[in-house]
Image (cartoon, rainbow, N blue to C red; front, side, top):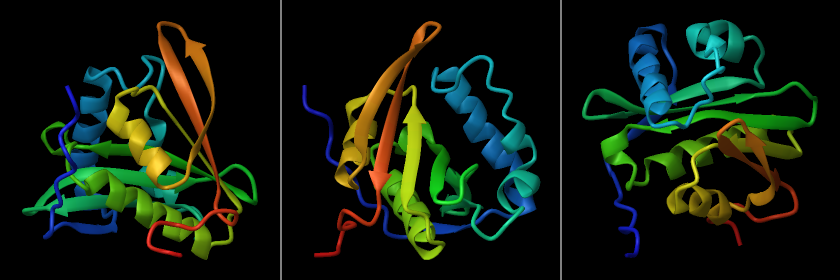
Length: 170
C-alpha cells in the first residue's frame, strides 16, 4: 500500500527554541523513545540541557515547529568538527508525521549549516520508515552505512552541501 502524500501545513512557524518550550520538546523526545526511535541508552542530556548543548556558539542551534499554538516538531544542529555539522533530534508529533513539518525543519537546519560555513552534514536515524529515508533523499542526503546497534539498525546519512543544489535551487 503506498504511503499517503505529504500534506502541507500552511500556518506553521519554525522558530528558535525558547526555555518555555522545554516541556514540549521533552514530550517529543519521550514520544521518540516510545516509538523506538531513540536507543535505550540515549541519556537525552542535550534535550535536558538545550541552552548549553545548542546555544554554546553561533554555529549550533535548536528550533521548534509551532502549529496552532503548540510545539509539534523540533530539530537541532551541533558539531564536534569545524567543517562538519550534525543534524540532531529531528522529531515531529506522531499524528502530523505525514505533513511537510519535517521537510521545513530540515530545510531550516540546512540553511543554517550553509550560512555558518559547514561543508558536510551528517545525520543518523533508527527510524526506517520509507518517508524518513525519502525525506533525506529528497534533500540530497546519501545513505552511507547501516550499523546494528543491539536490536536496531542505525542508518547513517551524509550530505556534501556544496556539491548539490538544495531544493528550490537550480
